[in-house]
Length: 451
Image 1 (tube, rainbow, N blue to C red):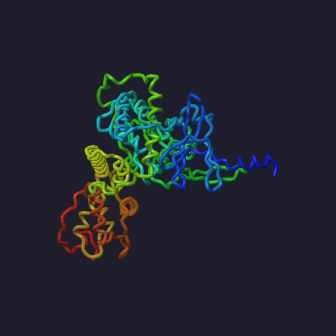
Image 2: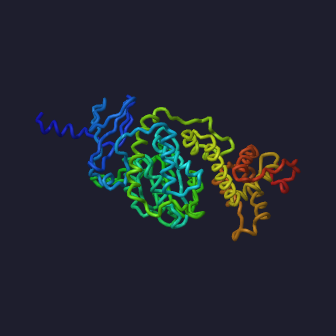
Image 3: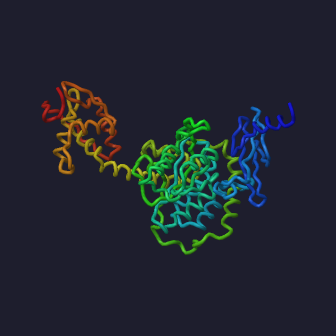
């Protein structure tokens, strides 16, 4: 084999890498020195770190860092640390993070703490299977972009994008770099293209749920590709999302609700970037020390919260060691849950469920006829609708939106009495008080039941 062939074979094994956790416990992270314009690997082998140019794996692969000429790195679209730096204690590091955020952003004290811990969580996010998002909501001029800059500049591999960005690069960058998506102007109500970014937000808080997109290879054949989008995300928007599932993923701070603190600078000083880079370097060593130790603390589950809210809150609670902040986070989640329940209670589903629950408590025999539900709904709420309330429409709501079963008996569709417990659980979800059990009258027309 000629020397040139050897070089080609070696080059084929080179794999550009951003970060990796190897089977022997070795951790690798891409670092960038902007003064020397050089990239390298910060490598942690359990008790010490070193800066290396490449890593040979047991599988015969050669991991190499991304080039310093990479446009994303050179233009600081993705923010990296320079080298691991000592951080003292975790509490000292947290205080530095909070002081940095306080210096440049006007948050409520509780959210300032939440944002500080979220920075820590972002550097450990791959130890968890679910992830909450932070959201900054307010009108223009309320400080959203400044807050994104301050918090996002400290997060793990922060990647800054705008709602005006082309969608395709966001998928590719998240898939290649991972890390934290920092998304400004994230209001996507009228654009099909921006709905693609909403897919990232919907899929990106749970590990193992990639977004599938159809790509075309060199032979112009369609080749579906899975893009990994899991990770922490910080979003700035003016309004809320219609999708309540997406809304439940956010811990939100309302911006611009009070007068700006006089000590917050109107313009970022030149020292801002260096301060952020120094903190990222300390956070890199923090990741090396803590990544293998941190785990989900299931004892922090709050039985008063819905499973989804517990799911997104637990990772953050697992890195918070302040009992008062844990309580404040749970209170915030309870307020969010109350808001979701109130919104559900104003929906068509809630009206159907309210009528059904009332009839179900009077039910005897096989269950409640769908026709009885539509008749009672017409009597109670018919004046609110511009269209006739049909049995077919009510049946679709029962089956597709409330996920209750129906079956056909004597020519009519019936919601079986065996689902009474399911109906009562749905009432709790929609904030509907379950009516007391009423002894059945035995008349189908009165009770809406079948003999």
